[in-house]
Length: 484
View 1 (tube, rainbow, N blue to C red):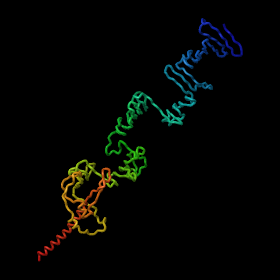
View 2: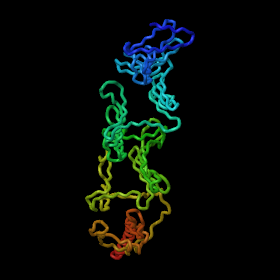
View 3: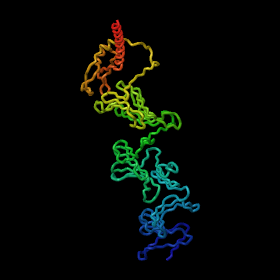
View 4: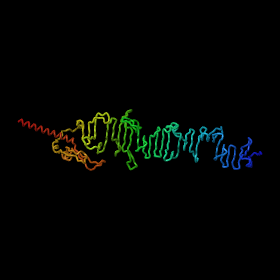
């Protein structure tokens, strides 16, 4: 039976429908009427395509909402919400799920509209109109190169954590293609939790690793010291090494790369290089790559260059120690058939010369022509006078046979020579003293005397001249006597 409700104001009609009538109750309104709202006895409300169940869940396009808001469309695979602009009914943003493809879409549709996510009243994430993801910031990174994903914080540190089980790896891959081929991981950064190592890859292969002890391997996946660099062999004439340290200074004399070698000099709080290795340009001429190798060490007066090999191979050593600027030692015993220092000439390469000078391990000096000399040009000398008589000195100096003590570590064969203390009594100028030092250069409080044999030989030459003069005088007298 139709019921008609008249009036200018809203009205309501309550119907008591027995269950036998059915579960459906329909109210039809004229086309000019308002919206019909039907409320069932269990509290649910039916607005046609909109339903509110007894639990207060709202269903749009579905009679059985599963949550506070459920949106469905039985006639389409797309189910979702759209936000439209009432001016032209254009869609500004939408959220929907496609049941056929499994695609879930959320975001802005119209130009210059983009999804933004808030928590505690503050924007936390946005996807801008270029598709860039920004977390904690509204300013994307470097345009075109590092702006696709940006994390920022205006007042604190920023970080990104990749968490996985302790027997797995966390990684970031760099790819230039799609699919399953190796180019999917053309470059990568990987942390292997099972061995606690950080790995860097390029061209689909591991190139560098930092292991759990902080050891770095470049070209080596198992470094056994602080830094290991492996690469193809470089020839001795190759200008490029496995490691190059290059200066960025403008080309000029004495510019180049350096490596410092040092440690702590005050407990474990202060460190400094104790020595440096240098490769420097040895001239200021443009397009001239001649260089030198140098070693500098630190001392009480600062860091000083001590050793240098120039582009021609000339080697220079600068020392200030009284214990020797150059010390050459061998593990071989003292002998006449074991070399300590060897010199040669006419060399076309390393070890390619003709030997001409040898210092043997027993201290003997051998050369090819038995010639030794000293600077003697008159232009270098002054106060030139005849030497005084050496006759008495030569007569007083004792020539002895002796052998060196075994404790000296020298050969113990019988030798011919003098004793410094005896010579000192006759000609003290021939004797010099050197302090005895321990292995660390500390003065032991004793001295070792030596004799300048080269001067002794010149004294002997002078005495011989005197002897010759005496002989010639005697010969003349003999001749006169024999003639008389």
